[in-house]
Length: 377
Image (cartoon, rainbow, N blue to C red; front, side, top):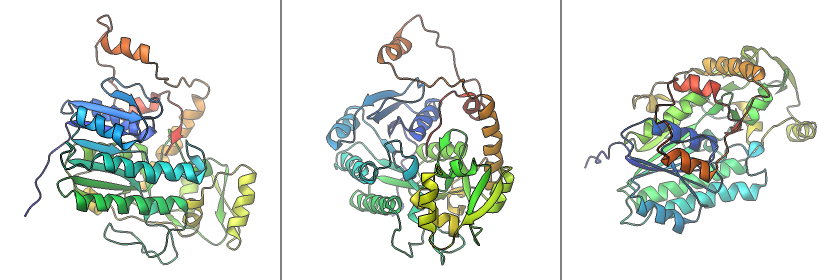
């Protein structure tokens, strides 16, 4: 029997509202009049100035989230909390805390949506291309139907594999819930804070001697649009989200106006990178094999849903270069948003506050002038 189309979301719960992606998604959904309610949950205050989104300060306890889901009659849950860069984790680099966020947290959110009489009929998960890993005999492009050919090599890869297995069990157990998983390629942008961006910011970018891996990127603008795209449509399944085009690492470095420095030895790479970390170089464990072998994703399935990437991989690199130049000019004028309950209450409910639209700029222009500090991928 054909699957019933559940249509777009009406009442949305965004987990991880204080993360960059949770906040940006909520901001995008606020501009959609078909979204009746947006509830954001997190253990930390929001990092963006939101208008329609109701924030509830709560951890990942499934019983509390279930209460919120039922009380607000949530039909769509979007989980944006997955930490995909161990070296740039907002919760610190301790593997136990990252694992608790990634695996235990996701299991609790799935439990909150698991009751047969739950109002939730759509679950969306922001995942990562680290699920595929990086190995010498990998295909040129991974498709969504492919399985991993090797055991996970890092804790982030293990978390991604474990979490997606739990989501698949949830999908089988609750066939009435439409489940969507997005596997994102390496993200580039002036507002995101990743190990790769720190590497690319160096005037001389280290490479592994004898290797020039292929890279595929996705711009931060397209990440937000992709999350919004699947939230406002019923698109069950797994999708690779990566821009068109593949670059070698040396091409990427050249586009950024930097110089390649192939000094990392092909043998004893881990020891050499550990020494470089002590000198201040940010290289996450999941990044090491990518610097050797690279990775490519087949994005045709996602584009078939009607999604159009604003940037190719090459354009995402150029966009990063331009945005970083602007960021240097604007250095020192940052004024990060801080959540204050009393101020929010006044802004939301006072009859003396002007209700004129505040977002006349396009999303890309607004992002360019947003004073928010860099945040983790």
